Picture (tube, rainbow, N blue to C red):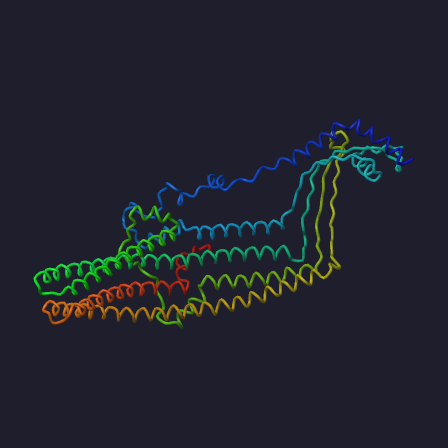
Length: 497
């Protein structure tokens, strides 16, 4: 009988409410088919252009003068800060961390939801409650067979967590630690980027000096070849002397080509650090100024330097924030054993024909206490995981300290080596210049063979290159010590950071 009643009622429902059912089916179908196609890479890039890397664009230089003016070291660093994509990524990581903090703090605010619901059916329990909320319960209703009903309901639901085992508070504290960690990552990028720009800037200058040395060598050998050729034609020199000079000329030209190629590679590397298109910047005839800049004050000894590094090195600041964050994570994990208390409230109107009336309004408010008694040992596993992460961060902090100490010690040793090599190189240049001058005079007087002359000229050329390398290595060593101490990040940090 019951099945027969339902089978006879269903056609009546479809007949009476067929348009409504079809409308809701159509809405559901449209919602399911309304997803847009994913955008292409080209479409995204056109919407968010990158002018620094535009194919026909002009590289962006932070320069008070024109782009053709010599680029100073300070301007190269500022250009890198303005254009380098690694630094831009670090900036947006900070913004992500700030957004995550705002999301975590949202747990302390009430949550409000506006809704509208349409329902129909013949379930007795649903009929009873919905009809009562409509304030339209018939007095002679058969609760076992109430028949078909429909209901529209619109209202506002609210919820606010009052206690959650300190998990929301812990999540907020962890989000704030993430901001400090992101700032530390940006400081690390700044520290390393500054040192790399300085090193590459002086690589360009040293490559340019190598070209000058190679050109001087080419001119010297060419002039000697011309003189020897005159002597050979007059019978005062041997053919072997000309052949030896030709070989040396080829070597000098090869060295000149290598020096020019090295300059182009160094320029391309500097352009890349500054976030510029290397080809466009080089084609514009990039010229660097001869200045050396003013490095930060560096402690003379390792003992004083390591104190500075332990206080300011960005990697250590990140490791310490990770320790703090993981410790807060343990507190949050232990909070899962505590109950949760929520305040929930609702205000709504109900009517079968969507004819709402404030005289038939409804509201509810309740305090809900939930306390998980058994969760399949998931809470103890979460606590164990948080403790393991904390121990890992302690080990990572110790590893970071050891790495920084090793880095600082290495940078000081290399600085001492660069100083000693610079002094030796300067003396070797003086010795090589004097030796070449004497050998040249002896060769012109016929007292030494051409091979000895070529050896002296080659020694002078090599001494000049070693001196140039040692000079710029000394400057780069200071910059590397500053990086190891975290001074470049300290100079660029803002008061908020």
